[in-house]
Image (cartoon, rainbow, N blue to C red; front, top):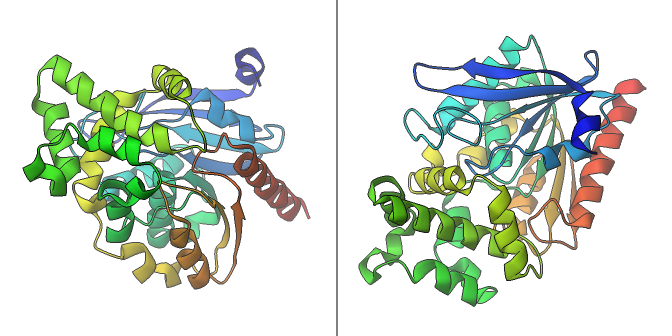
Length: 316
């Protein structure tokens, strides 16, 4: 869907001030009376993109896109001040209240699944259903896999490039080391470490991705906010008690949930999705021949199928 065609579905856009420091950029697209869906982007810090809009039938849905604190078009860019998971959960409620949306479907990918699940646990009455692509439970196992060497068995070259910049005495504290460089280094140092952090993630998020493709993606995304905020969150265990989601899953066990996960997801291992699905009573899980990226055709198709099922349920 091109930008010109997309513009005709734009209902409103702007900034919502959520505290003394942060303003969130948002867009509402689609049918004013349509099925409401909140799109929760990944990262943390990735922001939503025009490409994220391709999944939806705007004659049927009303979709809320927004950039989380510090991400992409939100202001101030890349800020870690008053930026925790609890504050992001509270922001979702502020966005929905501001837009007069009593309840909606929540669609999150990667870190967006973490935030969607945390929001649903605290506000189950606000969530009509969940679409979760690439489940990340933000527990010790998930973080250690991504930043503790779990990836190196499959992508040794990507892992070695990532930790080659880390002094030996900091190997056990990778996100904190990167964060220190990105926050307090020179301009050149901040840019270098942000790029390398993002390069690591993009190099493992899709099956058989080439260096040229990685570099092209990094030219199009706000990798500085992605890298800074990911390091900020992951160096603080995502500001969650260990096992928070799985320990509270009974609060959302009856919410209709669609789980979509790549069999070869190197960022979020499929065991995370499997364990979550086992605890839910009203979920379906689709594991497909793909990695982590929602640009892989099998994942994209599964997302669209879940949205079609929601349309059938809502209009029956």
